[in-house]
Length: 192
Image (tube, rainbow, N blue to C red):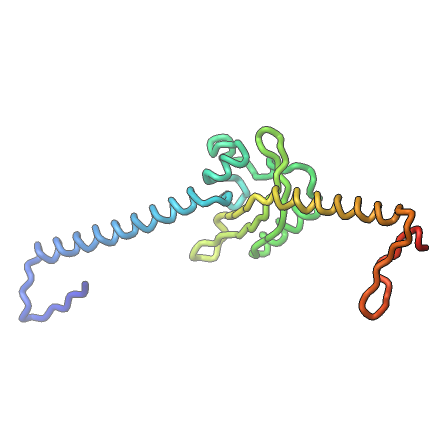
């Protein structure tokens, strides 16, 4: 809505003000709709979203975080997410995480955390530093997907593979596997 005025145009000031106020209302309404859409998306997404200030103190967590961890926003606001640590991840991982973030880069990796009830759960995390228009760090945002089921299946598969190899190795029969070109891939203890 652009206005071009010439000396020949006669738009009453009241009409111009009314149109400007109407334009302002539409812009604010559209902005409000956009903000509401983003708020709903963040709140209702299946992945956990955590937002902290530049010191790492939580300012926001979404519904998925509350459901998965058992902690409400009111309980964790102002805390550093380290309270979730399970002790199963080495300190080197956390040092790398902070060095990456302090360099202004996104960190991605798997973390093992604990719920309010003390139950371990695994997440695939992506943590990004957020900067304002002046390039100053203001926040960190973490988007985390619960991958506990996948980790448990991988662990079970590794245990199954180990049991299977033990059965093959301790079998009284001579067992081996070779490639198409005749190179041995596996030879059990009995064959040796």
